[in-house]
Length: 143
Image (cartoon, rainbow, N blue to C red; front, side):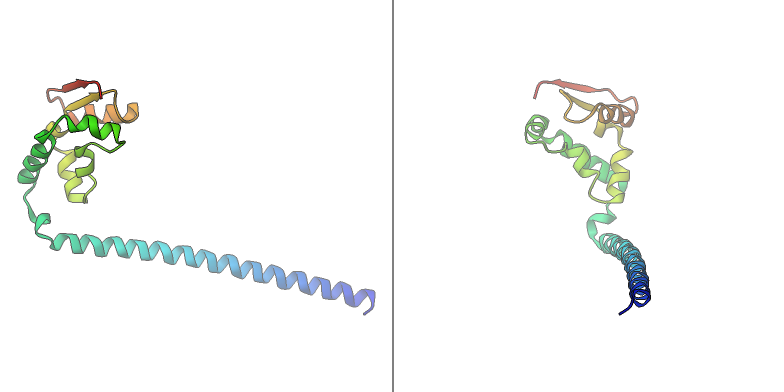
């Protein structure tokens, strides 16, 4: 193989490598897009499935009362949850479904208990105060 043939072969190899690399990137991009589409469809399917459950049909005012009962059941558990690095009951209730989140976030009394030291960042404390919407606050000091 002479020098010119080697240079042509080297250029062809580099062009092939560049083309393969470009195809890999395109396929990875397609894969990422498909993964997002699959996740979106799974979320939609889960929402439809959740809406069929009897618990999803509880009226918001009744659900709010249930949430309040859960919070008041054992207030001393808040300290235990803090020590175990667990979220408070009101936070956990607000993470069950979008409907439960909406009900929880619009139930000021659910957010009216503040435990010091606060288990989360200062921003979380500010959110509690906003969500309590002027309700009387119960402040607990100690774990």
